[in-house]
Length: 212
Image 1 (cartoon, helix red, strand yellow):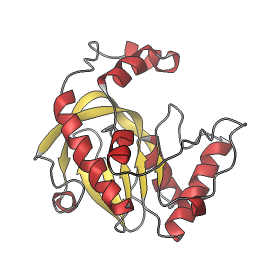
Image 2 (tube, one colour):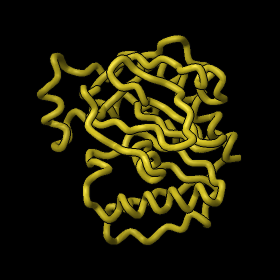
Image 3 (spheres, one colour):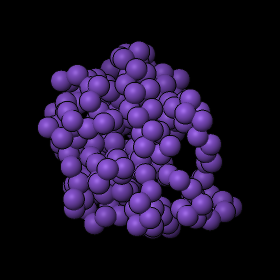
Image 4 (cartoon, one colour):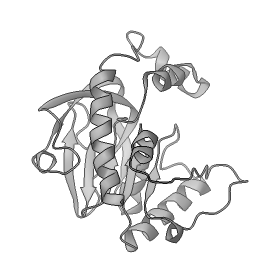
């Protein structure tokens, strides 16, 4: 749903699969904003492409560029800024409520959230807030669910961007089979999807206005 928001605001975009050795290097100086998405690996894994992403994050922040990180992407932002990423006490996989912190209630992106909103999660790790960050949202099992650094750097631990088809597809992927077997019941890809689509349109649309 991030792509839909970018298209709706007339923002052109490229994809960069940095984990592929054939992918060309990216220069943050060539872009007006950067988005860092999720993945099954850990920020703490010794993977060259993760270190490249963290360097891009630091370069983009030094240039004042807007940044959006989702799940692993939010952990990369936190880690790039010196925070610790570690295993969370509970794996959050499925639909769980998030509630806004005080800063979230006045935030330009999250002001449309109700007191508690069920959104989709798929993560087993969490992060400390990086220096200077403001906590925007929490869940019952994971305190640091969303943060902002400055006015234009956002990290979201939860997956506001997913469609029902994406959720269904993730459940069938080999790397996720272990997580799926641990669930008490099958995931319903459509549960809360309508409300989450509304929130995604608002949150990502307002982030696009920061970019544009």
